[in-house]
Image (cartoon, rainbow over all chains, first blue to last red; front, top):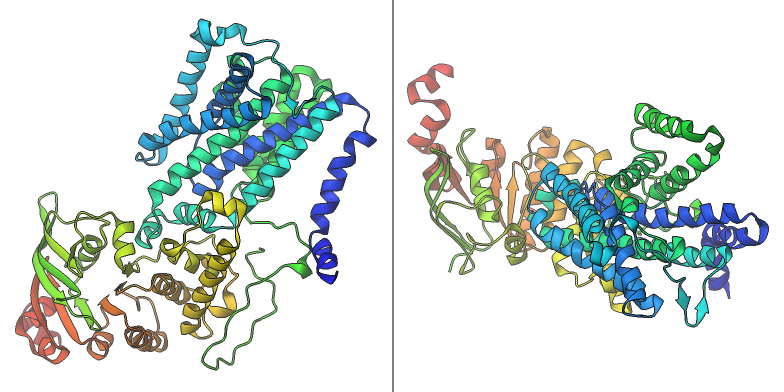
Length: 342
Length: 261
């Protein structure tokens, strides 16, 4: 009983946020707001997946929209042509994106720094051109229309509210799984590679394998987001997955901060909501958008949340590893807050 | 069989021979110092052993196994850990996590098990943490109180200690220390000397690059001297201190050395 109570207290900030997100559709009847929130969700997944590469692994991928697009097209094709059930094709979309991620990662990760970055950009452009010109398969610039809504165990997701809840589940799953990945041997290896690849290698970390795994994983998440997008908007065309989309994702990371889980979420939310808020300015709203990005780079280069790691826990419940004081050390654990900010 | 057997190792950088036919062996439980003037090829030899920068020819045999073809992480898994001359800690990672990375090769947790977290993953994490804290406790009060701090907030000397801790946690059979006392004051230097002895007593063999003669003379069982990529002498500290060629290499000729004094 006390354990349950304690776990509720420990997780209370998470629970409050989750309850707030759950109750939004009940409180807000405006369907437009729900739609924007759902888009925030898509971009949260995309930004978090890119964050795995750019934030944690320290690579710079500037063609991430390619995997997003691959997921969208794969999912649409799987559902419409192969008549696969939706959830299966969503996983299939992730798998297709992940497989392409593997094919890209394997040769390009041998390249260092800027060359690998250019390879990702190149892949995005090539994919766009293929989607644009392969009339028989992708219907070219006309895109694929009338993509059926998601059917989950016989339940058809149709209303804005339904999409919102579905997205919420996906986004929470993404954050949850990322948290677990980062707090593991796997996540530590990624950060070690970012911080100093040579030292990581010399300590026994198989850097190439971790990098490929990270790349595949990031592509998988992006593919799942793409699948949701396809069945949410019900129309996909190559334009939605061009490099400008990749740069929007990069801007989200730059704005929110990368290398932690909270930054990309804040960045994604901000860059989806801001253009909507300034819609009354019509075309001029992109001035605001650009202005905010320039101001960020001038005044807070590391992003709103910077590069610290955050846990959604009240400070007095945060657990710290207890030091073992062998051999009669007189030193006792200090109480001052760690400068890492945890 | 020696623990480490280096035979005829040559490393060329373009036309420059950074190492020329270097050979020596190390026995288990020894502390061997590698000394020589700047540019003698000491760090290059470390890079050859660890696979970071494999040699052009020659053989490096570790416990009967050839290392020259292996990538660095494989060498590390065979039981060779190192520290770097220019500190390479993982700056934006906590001290504890830095050391945990040193234990990576022993872990079995992959992506799937990290997601599902079956009980053995938790046990593995606990064991890793325990092990890391135990290694950190070797450094007394230096690192333990700071386990949650980012490594880049540590002082210079503490970063060096952290590098050693990270290397030690993998339980290496051979530990390569590249100038562990660089930039340390005499008091801290003495601490490192004691530490190297402790490390040896824990069953590790140590090869150390060092410039401070006081450290070299007190800590080493044997000394290997390199100059211009060649081994010019090898022997106990007393032998080396009396070696004509070593003095010449360091002083640039006996006569000038005397004048300088």
